[in-house]
Image 1 (cartoon, rainbow, N blue to C red):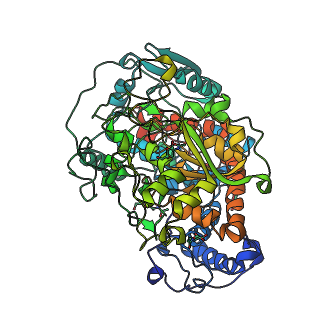
Image 2 (cartoon, helix red, strand yellow):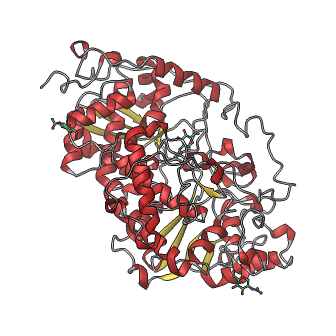
Length: 616
Ligand SMILES: *[C@@H]1O[C@H](CO)[C@@H](O)[C@H](O)[C@H]1NC(C)=O
Ligand SMILES: *[C@@H]1O[C@H](CO)[C@@H](O)[C@H](O)[C@H]1NC(C)=O
Ligand SMILES: *[C@@H]1O[C@H](CO)[C@@H](O)[C@H](O)[C@H]1NC(C)=O
Ligand SMILES: *[C@@H]1O[C@H](CO)[C@@H](O)[C@H](O)[C@H]1NC(C)=O
């Protein structure tokens, strides 16, 4: 989504080669960081001219003002956002032009109706926001259209939404425990009047399901790129063919899903039954001085081999049923190695208060408590006596438990009940870490606990079912806190459960608090949210979380950094109100369906929308 990138320490920062322009316009961080405004002008001018050339972040002239890595990341995020917004399309011909530029094809048929809808609902249109669709679909261009149709045929799947003659048809022949299909069906139904015939096989399970070997996908992506075609307008067909009769079966093949040069490639599986927790205590790879700078890379477990023993998704998922061949399957979230096609998750489409919030937001920032609140169940996979210390939620809760951290600092936390390590002091230079007061301090700012220990096997006594013999000594079960009550806290962490966390959208849209987000899962919205501007990204080990909390809530936090936090909370909320609305999810899904239907069409190479080129 972005081209500019922070590189390492100050040595990596080149000199600005830039001119000056209207300064006030960019005075976004406010007076407390006045120098950053000058910085914005630099970055913007540079970006306007040479977006693609900027590979490093120019801070030489301001590094004495922006001491902290987190300050730099925040300023950088703002600049990136400005750059992105400069690419907004305000009319149909620009939208079509940007499409051709970025995708190397004509827009799909009926692109104008899609655009009209976007305009009607004041959607912010930046072509980059739809990158996910193309990352997901491009490999399918290497399959014959007939093959894609066959693989997505309603008879071949248990859960399918089809469109025929502008009607959405729901097929659900097995359990749909979370009632996901009706949500998706309703959305497609709202759009069906504009959609071509199509079959969309859906994944209703908690986990993503496709793992195609990396070599295979890489070959497909290259083949797709080579095959892109912007046909002369006169040769373009502007109507979908519709769906002919379809039949036959998918098959299987062997796998290695990480790229050859990634750290996780060929890593032997860890012995979580016998090894103690191996958690790196230094800066995570690809981080900027310890803090997440590339959201995509931070979620890619191929880059972080240690996550295999530090995240439930790799230890014991609750349900799993995967396939290794490339078949179309639509779902709400996936790991980087998965080849599922992303659509907005059903939970973001419900009005269920648990996930959707009530829309009334939290109190004003100044009325909120300067603390961190989290409640959730001990999910993240099926935790057992021998494996629970490797689970991410257990680690998260323990790391934010001041008592447990204090016990760790004083070496009185039992080794067999320890899920984490403290950051290396050479890397994360926190006063509290150095003088052994981290636990004591955390106790004053966090309220983080499980509401259910999800024991396996369950204790026999129904009355004790929220307890668990092996984790009882380390975790207290607390009562749930409704979402709107959580909004009274300034900081709301959001971590993966059995899969992605369905609260993220509501937190961003409603809370007016800062969301601290750690996840391994990719979602539809990834290219439209800017880490450090709309939320605070956290590494999946949580090694950086103390540094983050110290920055915002520590001694300095109550002054300047509290203002930065307030700004992230506000920006996140305002932005979510513009790009994460139901209308935005509809537009994303609509675009996805247009593209997928084109893929399934025998005339796909010449199918497109070219009215702008024909001067109509
Ligand atoms: C993140 O890293 C990927 C892979 O190296 C790169 O393609 C992408 O542009 C980077 N994103 C940002 C925001 O720097
Ligand atoms: C569309 O917008 C572009 C840039 O904003 C402008 O140059 C162009 O004239 C506009 N086209 C129409 C048809 O309004
Ligand atoms: C340790 O550092 C914290 C700041 O993080 C400070 O508040 C506290 O007084 C220090 N304690 C000691 C014993 O020096
Ligand atoms: C915090 O840790 C202590 C020590 O391990 C434990 O007794 C307590 O139950 C934990 N509290 C919560 C809320 O999990």
